[in-house]
Amino acid sequence: MQLLSEVPARPYEVNSIPLEIEKVELRTVRLKLNEPFETSFGSIDSRLIFLVSVTAEGKTGWGEVVASEEPHYSYETAGTATHVIRDFLAPAMISDRVADLTDLAIRFSSFRGHNMAKAGLELAYMDLLGQVTGQSLSQLIGGTRSNIAVGVSLGIQPSFEKLLDRINRYLSLGYRRIKLKIKPGWDIGIVREVRRHHPDIVLSVDANSAYTISDEAYLKQLDDFRLLMIEQPLNHDDLIDHARFQSVMRTAICLDESITGIHRTQQALDLKSCRIINIKIGRVGGYSQALAIHDTCHARKIPVWCGGMLESGIGRAHNIALASLPGFELPGDISASSRYFARDVITPEVTVSPDGIVEVPTGSGIGFEVDLDYINAMTQTVERIEN
Ligand code: OSB
Ligand code: MG
Image 1 (cartoon, rainbow, N blue to C red):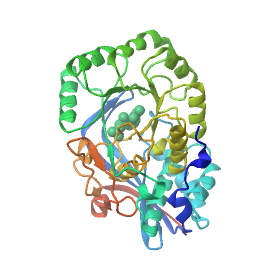
Image 2: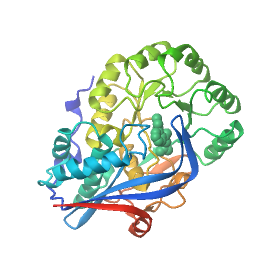
Image 3: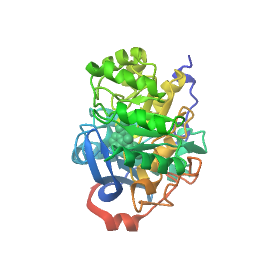
């Protein structure tokens, strides 16, 4: 087994320069979704985008807090993240020069939980560091891919016909993997029919914790459909029941909600709770944890892939950088901007090639232009925390 210490030092570890953060700015921007997104939690038709920017040396770095308005996917909300950033995290960040990402992560680690709030600031810091040092995010974190393969996550639809229509549309746009959201009543029958129409596509399902281990015999039927994986079928913070379920399933279980950091990752792998891990930078608390999870999984030959949270282009740009790491062997939930919004907050917007590929940008920081005019026009609230 490869030891963590054998992972080569990352450029940000070698080349960081201390940054005195002068200002942290929090904004909310509401973007209408092109189509409603329904999961086992319910349906939304717009996304409250929570942007964070940090300023030093005349440059501004951008991040995104992926928390939703309501605490369904996780206990965090835009409201809790505002409180925790304003009252705890931003003061810790601006109290003293930030030496490097590890310094920042150590300061944040004295506050328990609130990973999405922490991640928002880590993202903004890393964009800023990239701009100051003239490196792209992918370069800073040791990315090895110049382009990444992507899939699409399809919400629960009003009818099977509508779902089939969406699947056909995204296949024709080039997406390399179709993920179906499932819940009780929209599961085995739907998956069976999709497989009948599309015997050969790469297909997975995501239950967002809609089942319990008492559904084991019922869910076992999913083994018939040659799925790439079953994402987070059971309780949102469980590892034990998933280990039992994985032991009776041929299909790989992938954990999303249950993996909140490196410690949980090690436990999940030791318990054999899953064979695949979905990494979302927000859910795990930022780059520091996401990179550690990636390294551990890569060393233990566990494939990882980049999850999505219906981010704006700013969060999406960070996801693209993360997915350029070598262990990201499966297509990410990183769709084109146009799949979510009529207009994105970055230029150029994210596009997917006809063969399901997104290019990793090479410009410094996030590598996209932040469209401040559009952001200002759409901003609902702004708050500044200054040194
Ligand atoms: O479970 O992966 C999830 C969106 C919001 C909350 C949770 C999830 C999702 C998605 C969408 O599946 C992925 C995307 O396209 O951003
Ligand atoms: Mg998921």
